[in-house]
Length: 71
Length: 561
Image (cartoon, rainbow over all chains, first blue to last red; front, side, top):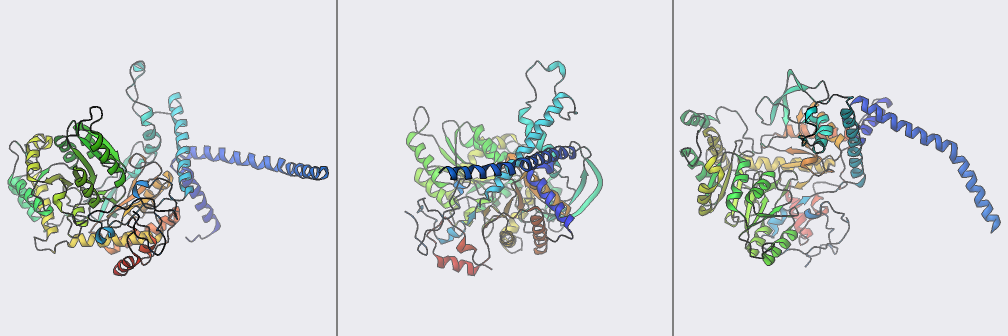
């Protein structure tokens, strides 16, 4: 398939997402509900990982160093 | 005993029809015994090349995901309808009737209400020309998401028709070809106004029955006005209580209805699986009827020639061997295979080179390959004479209309080569179209089910969203396809079913294939993981017949164009 520009490629990706999740058959307002729920869930995951992952990594490193010193 | 080994290793046993849905190892072991019986010579082996490839696992996951999300939204919409926030378009009881026994079973209609209604613009499309290789559609739009439709008045002309059962192209309106039909209509009129038993037995019916018997190579035959009714009304006349019916898993509704109406015990064996059938036969012969253990009065094996949803062909020589061994009877429903397979169109008996007298009851319909309506039952003269007086269809149903009868006669004469055309010309054209279409589709990378000889080609689409998008895209490109989804097929295996016709020209097929290629890329439908090219397909494809040596495979590959 030849895509004239990047927006066309994005549109095709969105189309695939609609087909795979089955949203394609729903009415537009139902599509918006599902998209907003999915988007907010993904946003929450990203926010949580942004806030907590560095601290978790830091603590894990400290713990492994402590274990090393202990042994 | 496992068949002979080719090249020092056992071929992976992938395509056993009965194990289609199970987990099969691709490079696994052959763990089924090879059946040695009549008809397993090279000629019949060549016709047994069927494949039912499984899609990658992510496809099944996505299919379930799609159905799950739409089901959730279905529950949500039902809730809105129950609360009253949304107008309900379906039939409902009145408030005063709420305490009575419910009239409309809500849960059974859940699927219809919440999935089918959303997408039902892909089915029941109104056609306004004859269903030939191209046809005209009336344009239809919906303003309220498919609850109601409105015709715009425009017609879509010359839409390529790959959905009609027009296998030999007899759905035509050429005045020269239909001259005899017009003459007979002038002679007999259109309505018969009676049943066959009373006063509706016209001379033309006798002529048709003799012609059908000669065409099939049997003693005698009887025709009926409706194909569905041929099965559902005649099986009760042949079997009754105290008989056993062994019916294939994927049999048509008419066969199932006839079996249930007869009152016989019904047992279902796995699709095209001879081991399952033999186990049931031996158990039936040894144990007899369920509680009394008396022997069964009759054991009837019901199979179809070509199964239209899968495109698979029955394994006739093996069934006949089993039937002779266990003294059962065979009922063969050739609705899709009569006229469409076999070197001269005589159906699966010719395809497998089997004596037609071995099949006890041969049934078929005239709707598909002959471009008419109705069905027939053929076999020994005693059987057909019995049916003439005991069948519900013969006694109560109106006889076949004369123009329809004459259409069947002229179509049959054309196939047999009696009216000046070459014998089997259309059948050969259909076989060529089938081979070409299937080979090109496999090359493109679609998953196709069924036997290489079958003119019914199901392309697997799997996901509900893609099924709908496929139908709509193809219509936009002026190709009319039939897509089939959940109730008629297993839930994970939605498909588009292509019915090829002898009337399709190579240019039409090329156009369809070109658009299929584009739509397949745009929708990501090419799930096949097998590499295919017209030379190596036979040596790479797995096959039941392990005894086939590489040399005979490559000889066949060289012989194919």
